[in-house]
Amino acid sequence: MAIDTNKCVGCTDCVVACQTENNVPIGFCRDWITETVDGTYPNIEIELRSERCNHCDNAPCVRCCPTGASQVADGGIVITVEDECIGCGACIESCPYEARYTHPEGYVDKCTFCLHRVKEGELPACVSVCPTKCMYFGDIDDPNSDVSKVMKFRKYKTLAPEAGTDPHIFYLI
Amino acid sequence: MKEELIISGRNLPHIDPHLNLWHWQISLYLFLGGLAAGILFFAALVTLLGKEKEYEGAVKFATLIPPIALVIGLFVLIIDLSHMWYAWRLYVTFRITSPMSWGAWTLMLVTPISFLWVMSYMKEYFLYWRWKEGWLHKIEWVVDWLANNRKLMAWILIPSTIILGIYTGILLSAFNARPLWNNSILGILFLTSGLSTGAAMIILFGRSHKERKLFSKIDLILIGIELFLITHMFMGMLAGSQVQLEASELLLGGQFAVTFWVFVVILGLVFPAILEIFELIGFRVPVYVPALLVLMGGVVFRFVMIDAGQLTRFLY
Image: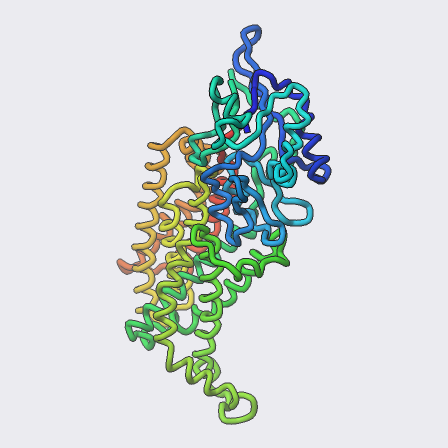
């Protein structure tokens, strides 16, 4: 997934869409908006980012899970299987993006890139509702996907690359 | 000036504003697991060297602690699981990359053996039981068999207690998201600390002057190694990346500095070491004072590491 920080206005539509689509309990969220303010007024720069699980290639949550509940689904999406999760919290401790939380029912929950929608050929809920169309979703290995096309001509960054997790949310800058 | 804020009102329990998911249960378990590993390691070593008669405290009396410690430790671990009715999932798989999986299986091995070890000394604890009568007669062969096969248990215990002692540290060091934990010294540091608290417990249960003196010496050496490893850990962090510098700052001058330096390093390591040296060169020091201090240091060390480690992070 690529997210255009220049187009994002921080409206939180993606957060609400996710909560609705995935029945996220009240008070919890799988995605959130971060605002970075750099400089001193009047020379100020603001960056808005819609953040969520980075579906890392070298996912520490998958590595440290003692039961295999945290796993990589087909296509590289990192998911948690409720019935295999014991709620030990190792994955939450291991995530540099704090993208996981304990669901009130006990298991650990997180962004799935709306795997159930993606399987049907639809876009994740957050991408589909974005009013500024700042999110691009697709298979990074496919040169014709939306995300590959936009990353060809734009500069981008990832969050905390120094954590060594090979994150797969790209912020266009 | 750069400022980062989550503006969509995220307030996840135990995660915002900073991670505080693991609490006293984990710290207590790390201490009890290390302690049990330490005691059983020395008991197994003494047995394999054939010195059971000389060091009875180590093999016969201090070993009453590990079953209790492990049961309490496992109990608090399980109540800490938020999806605890699925805990059996740990035992239908083995994840080679997950230290917690290694730990779960090691506990499955060490905990029963710690009980069997105590059982093997049943006849020596209760000298006046009538083993030829009633229900005792039915279990006599088990107790006899265990007593005759103590060396076998000791051979299993040596590697498994080392894994038990070291995995608690490796478990934490495997989390690259927590810069304070993410250093390769932590495994061996936790193992040393566990062995040191084990030796201290054996001193408390020591049956002879000779035994207490030997374990005081062992404890002294382990304290020396531990102090070196702590120095080494800080050297590594201070020469590390920005996040590690910030992590070491928590213990070197930040909010955990006093707890760490006063209760762990000075009262838990340096002071008992001085007392043990005094004792070895002939001064009369009540033997339980340094031993209790070492145990206290071990507990506080686990609490500091768990609480401070969760404050360290990469983002925001």
